[in-house]
Image (cartoon, rainbow, N blue to C red; front, side):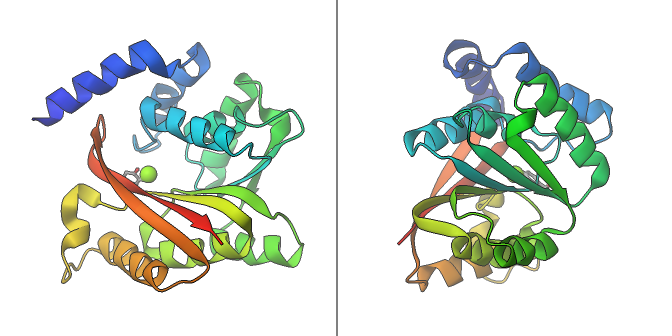
Length: 221
Ligand code: DHB
Ligand code: MG
């Protein structure tokens, strides 16, 4: 099987069962046109986030890394009207674009963007007793994922879900001696999770329109 097949199947699934509306369909191209990297989750992955959030009736969602707001919209649409999503984004230009996309998607009132490095926002959220969160989606710089994951656990309710994007990195996560900071970040995070009594986790390899990668799915105790 080849990447072209993965893309063709993703296209087929997107057309058939994912159910993107016109707003979501336009976000990736609008983000690229604004100069953002074309690295948002695929439609099928976005829908997975939406289904997972709905399955646990998530009312408080934390996102680390908004980019153009594509995953933000999928997650925010899983919320009831009184649910809230807090999205941490370091880049003010990205946050502004994401906020515009959330407004077009009709979820602006449910979404708050905090524009700062997440390692500054996360302790502030804890100090302000924000949360606890029912679901956290981590999709930001991979080097800081060990710290992001630790903060996500601290900010979670018992039985909360934590999802981390990009844990497989084309298979390179299995390379113990990798010098790639992203791979090292994921390996450090995975090793910490393995001996962390606060969580139980798995990771699943995926192929699709973004190639070969995978996500981590954890539940807090
Ligand atoms: C990259 C980041 C992502 O979150 C992703 O899903 C794919 C690629 C990157 O930084 O290359
Ligand atoms: Mg990602």
